[in-house]
Image (spheres, rainbow, N blue to C red):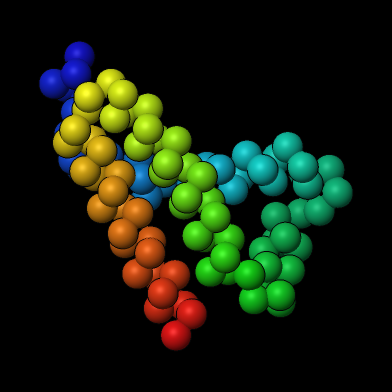
Length: 97
């Protein structure tokens, strides 16, 4: 089973989409009854928290994903997660400049 899923491309996809999943889970758990998703996104834009939110969700999601896959010794998958994290880092950097 390791050889089937230990692919850099799958790690990259997981690393790109897992921060969105973390954001959505936090929204569902904490805010779903009180605010709509568009209200939350409007507040994030109004307070200029986009870069900080991206950095936080990427860190939380990808460090968990990387740690689990590293312990399973899925090295190619970890490379993909790391690549996705670096892409997000450049995105956050470009948002701050």
